Length: 241
Image 1 (cartoon, rainbow, N blue to C red):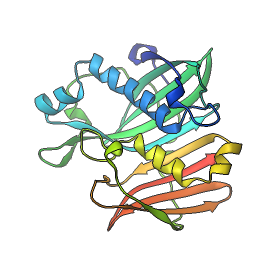
Image 2 (image 1 turned 120 degrees about the vertical axis):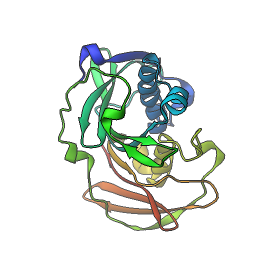
Image 3 (image 1 turned 90 degrees about the horizontal axis):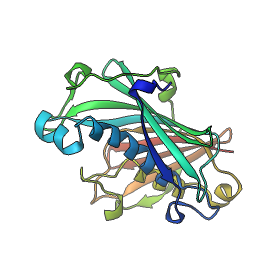
């Protein structure tokens, strides 16, 4: 639940290049907007990516997320995007980011993050974060962000491309949503929009080696997985509706 004093809000209009064949916002486009709003809140606090790295030797890494979709945003729609930290449990930081239009909450995104020291290659405790923040309330059971995925059959291989990469040199968080959607049957996406996505980022995916992609379907839900060599890079469960 967002806490007004700890909430940062942006406005965004859904553009043509962000949409699919049904004039719905692509999941990857939606994730980029939600992700950028959270980054803008950090920037507003004076803790942009470069400052965090250079001054504090730390960065946030997203580990798990759950995206709940009431209605996918569509072409031309004006969105109010609001984000708020939700406190910590153990080593995890939690955050909620909502997309709202005309007073209706279209999308809720819950994410869990770890604070990481890239130089020392170690996870930092939450009390290492250099600023106090106003937190909202985590109104879901954090165990909902932990899920089991059935490993299905090999659905194909996909190289990690230039367009997937971010300044960290690995596949960007939002780019995984293009990978996931490309694994789903096109006709299923013509009939229905994503309603729920759970994603676990297990290991960074790097250029130079293909992702081996696995897919299964169980009880109307798609179980998706990607591996590079011995490393499992992501697991996802996707429901359409």
